[in-house]
Length: 124
Image (cartoon, rainbow, N blue to C red; front, side):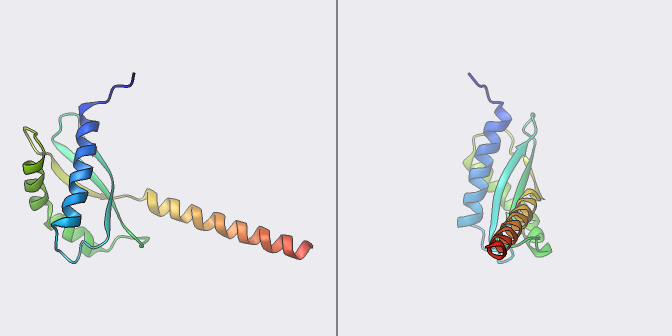
């Protein structure tokens, strides 16, 4: 039987709620196509690092980061209403670089695949 730390369960809840709030309640045009990819919460539940990507882009627009930082107070208030926690964790937004890395790997693999197909056509 696997046991999960409370911080992991809270992180999952925060990810769901933050995604929902960003989708339905935030009207800031700077926060357009932001997707929450993960949340890490400290064991004392005082700090939550929220990892995100901007869909369709390799890099994050600085305006997007500014918009998220400006919305932090609102997001924290909404989280307090939705979650039954004694303390709502402080929110820190971090860019998830793993998606850009994965995207680069996909591009390289497709490039290799195309080169192999071209070489196969030449050999025939």
